[in-house]
Image (cartoon, rainbow, N blue to C red; front, side, top):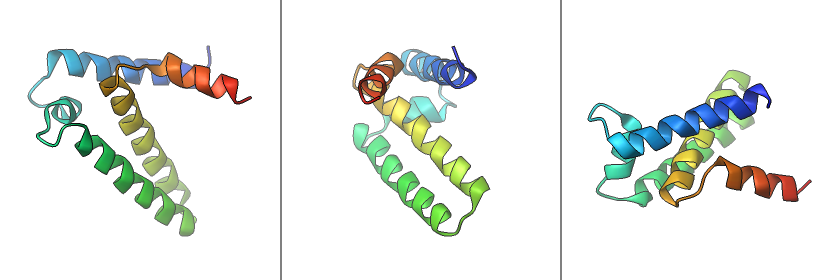
Length: 97
């Protein structure tokens, strides 16, 4: 397993844990309990995507990495909300090879 696989698995495990335990001081937990429901995560994905595009336009590599990570994080939250996991993502990517 690559370092990237491990990081994604670890991050997804944290997302799943926050979904279960809903700690009050957790941003991740707040996404699961937000009054807008999954729309809150969808809005964040849209916002982060726009920020990634602007960083790419400016050729700001540090910001590109930051915004790409935000997208991956919010995507993992969305997968969890939909009862999916990283294995579903890996399977789809594998099928596209």
